[in-house]
Amino acid sequence: MTIEYDSYHGYQLQYRDSYAGLPVREVCAEPAAFPPGDSGSVAWRLSSDHGDDFAGFSAAFDAFLEQADAGQVTAIVVGAWEECYATSSAPIVERLVREAPRLPALRSLFLGAISGDQAEISWIQQSDVTPLLEAYPKLERFDVRGGTGLELRPVRHESLRMLRVETGGLSGEVARAVAASDLPTLEHLELWLGIPDYGGDATVADLDPILRGERLPALRHLGLQDSEIQDEIAAAVAFAPVVARLESLALSMGTLGDEGAAALLTGQPLTHLRRLDLHHHYLSDAMMRRVAEALPGVDVDLSGREDPDEDDGEQWLYVAVSE
Image 1 (cartoon, rainbow, N blue to C red):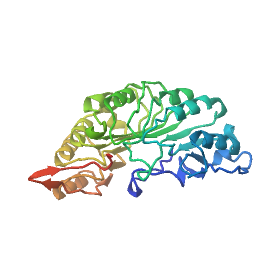
Image 2 (cartoon, rainbow, N blue to C red; image 1 turned 180 degrees about the horizontal axis):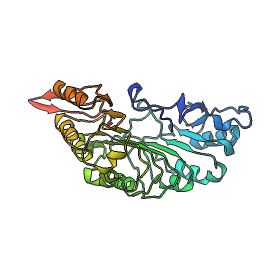
Image 3 (cartoon, one colour; image 1 turned 90 degrees about the vertical axis):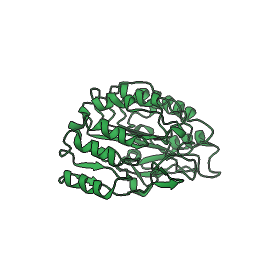
């Protein structure tokens, strides 16, 4: 599965150009002819952020069903809905679930591709997204942005290959639900853990089933990112059974320091990895050299070194995405 995510050009991409390897087509207010059979060649972006074009997201969805051959659609990007900082995604989830019989080819879905100028990531009001996974058993990729109000129950999904959860604060409840889910085909798991100020209370213990990997036999990429406890996570990852089968590992976007990096290097060998992503970190020059020298055949990303802020003798470290 091609991963089109580029963390360097904005952490909160709107996916207006491409998504899931497909060019994005914006649903427009006016009916537009689209050649039969071509509706599956694009990712359809639905939102109510077109000024006065739509009365709301429901109208945008109606226009989508008029413009697309729903039975051919393979990818949908859900952008901003009206007052997404105050109104939850529950009606959108309900509509997508209701329309599932008309969307049998849907394989990729992003719920909440909303940029910071529309709503900060922790302002986005999400809801229980479990019904989407239940309604679309053939879904292969699911992305969701926003942790406020986000709920998930443990599920078994036979087709999901990529799961990405972008938050400024991931609750322990959601982390435990991901960890308790049976995902036999999942290859790519990415969790932005965030900070406690925005609901990020997930702990290393909550992530333990993921690190054991017993329910994730196909996992090849693991991202546990954007965390204030990045050193603790690195120490746990150092001895995690799942790491032996990974091709790439991301502990980026958080407050990783020398302590966490040293723990990572003193654990199991990481030389089998193709890529280790540590960008946005707080490593010293000496530790950066040590990491690079210890993994000569690995593509190690040590870019984006940050310096702690100091205030009255105290040092403050920040994750890449919080509010």
